[in-house]
Length: 211
Image (cartoon, rainbow, N blue to C red; front, side, top):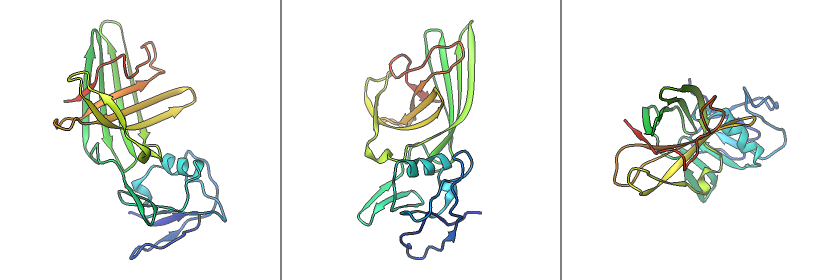
């Protein structure tokens, strides 16, 4: 069941929204949202719309006096940002690409406004393979600007949204977008810690394309 709750102290009440108070206790980033007493507020209409990592990153970045309502990040009474609409929430998509004897399949599913489930399958034909599943999130200040990638198929640049999953020295960045005139999803991966397979970067592998 969806819940309406606030983190920290609620600084204003949205019209016709009812809220339930959360405990003002600071808890580990891995399983709960960090909160602090006597501080500016982050209002959240429904916590299931956003990942815990995203919410805790907002606090760590010092973002306050903001509201998260459905697909909107409300920074002030005059400044509202819409969360990226690509990829579509709830849709499972497989993107693939091959370069020489190396192939990658990326399976993604957008689970809420901030987060995708993903599976990466890498194969060096006749040599080795590597598979990994995880979740990747938007950065809280995604609204400062989209990434720009170039399709290796057409040479045309397109805007993309970056989702990331970083742990210790290992990182995964998944960038997803579409060319203006094309209906299919495009992807780029930046990733290390791939077992025996080389690090993947923007320039050393082809654009992944929706099947």
